View 1: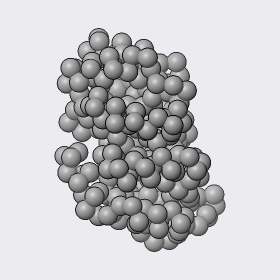
View 2: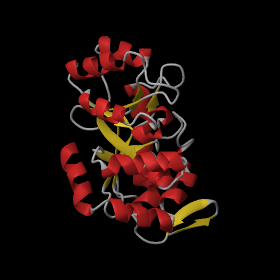
View 3: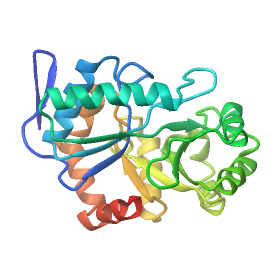
View 4: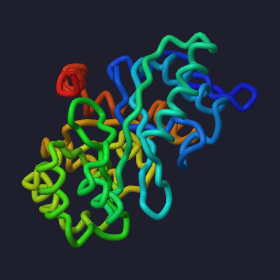
Length: 249
């Protein structure tokens, strides 16, 4: 489904016509662990566009001790990428939000009424530490919602500490979190246990949204491998993803 020409990934046929909008990616250049520069961003956007994805919500990390991005830094990178896409002749829609680590810095932003970058309306993309959930998760969930936001938790299948405590997924839903699956998780890219957790979440109808969480060309190649595309066809339908879009508008 792809080839590499001069170190650039090029898709050979539309692979993602059913996924019209990617709500989780790291395509903005140079501000987190995603695309390092404009040229890489353009290459990735072009490949995804040729694969059928025409709308992107870029979600760079905001992490207190690593990536203290702000609306200013994110919008500057967004404007740069938007202009580069126009120059490259790419007919795509690119906007930006953020992926907020639920740490003390995030809580301070909420309490100070700092402007938060949402996916659409009041949907706020969040993530947990890969080491352990915060001890004050319930408090954070309450403060997110009383601040007027609807929390979406990114890639719950990737938190290894939940694999032996799957009832915690129900607890997350009870706390008001919507759950966003990484498509890469189904492919085994992050390991067999993550793939099994992804399958469990889908089969138990716990997933509300999905996204690529694309950072680099290796992610793109894994997403577009023939076995991966067969898996996506098995688990998702066009109607399923249309429901995702309807919720975001």
